[in-house]
Amino acid sequence: MASNLLDDNIEDILRTVLGSASEDLLVVNPSADAIEELVDVAGDIDDRPRMRLLGDESTLKTVMSDFILASNAANLVDDDSLELRTLADGSENSLLVTPSEVVALVNVGDTVAGLTTDDEEFVSLAYDAYDATWNDATEFKLRTPPLSRVRTTLSDEIGDSIEADFSGVLDSLQTARGDGDGLDEVTISLLVAAKNEVLLYDISKWGEDVGIASKATFSRTKTRLEDMGLIDTEKVPIDVGRPRLRLKFGDERLRDANTDQLASVAQNLLN
Image (tube, rainbow, N blue to C red; front, side, top):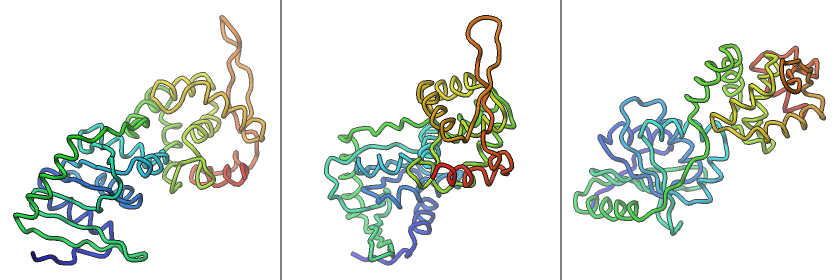
């Protein structure tokens, strides 16, 4: 059985395989890095194959805790390009399997190599085996809404300027987990709402409707940011009921920050 080295970079390996896979790609037991690269690379390819990812549940949960990655993955799920299921046994090899080739992803230190074979008998056996595994696997459900829907509804329901700020903040971040390495999606939403002096009711209703978080989560996060001095509120009377709260920045450094600086300034203040 002949095999050869496809590449030594996971991004290039995935681009090569996605470019050559005409219809179906099974991604078996990928690492966290491979999942991240798959989502990034697939998002740049218009004519991509159907991707079926069989992953370790804990790895998928960790990776998908990043809003930026999960919302881009949800874009792929939403347009029927990507499906996610969990492996019952995480000891499987890391493989890319198509009807015409099998690529084994081999990690050596910081290097990833792709060992590939197109031996018809072996490829057929591997594809049939993992296709059967897929059919028996449990769906991994993403709780994050597609980023395209988040942006569209934010623009339609609140305004173009806040959507531009929201996208600008995301573009300036590597992750959006809220674990010290990045702001979470609720905090980002509230910060750009404060920048645009939007009502708390409006941003929290939008966030709950689109599936980012509940109104209660928005309210708790607002209170935390207000207690830390990042945002402030002012009461806005309405015809019937209690006044609503308009969000504003509570720190001059946030008021002076450009959109692409907003995340780093907020992160420094939170720390």
